[in-house]
Length: 118
Image 1: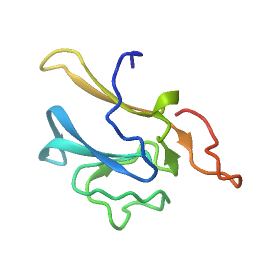
Image 2: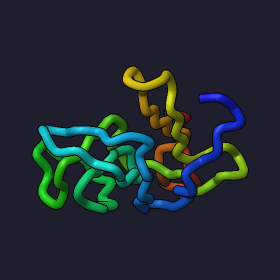
Image 3: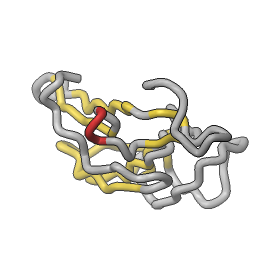
């Protein structure tokens, strides 16, 4: 996404932030107008689960969800560019809603965030 795209405000560890969708998104026949973005790399349509440990799907405690980067992620350092960013591209009826994670894998043994941008 472009440098000027604002983050959604998810600068937490193991937190979930609601996003109002710019147009309804239909998942398995049900339209949704919001999605809950977890700092741990998943998008939830019916739950707000902050779990970071990934398991085989379907995962208990999650409803309808997408799991593109599900792992123990860390989006706290907004000053360094970490966060979850969104954008809408195209024009109706050919729009796309983009969600970009700029984060680090969570804590190593030293207690400091380690890892890479995803």
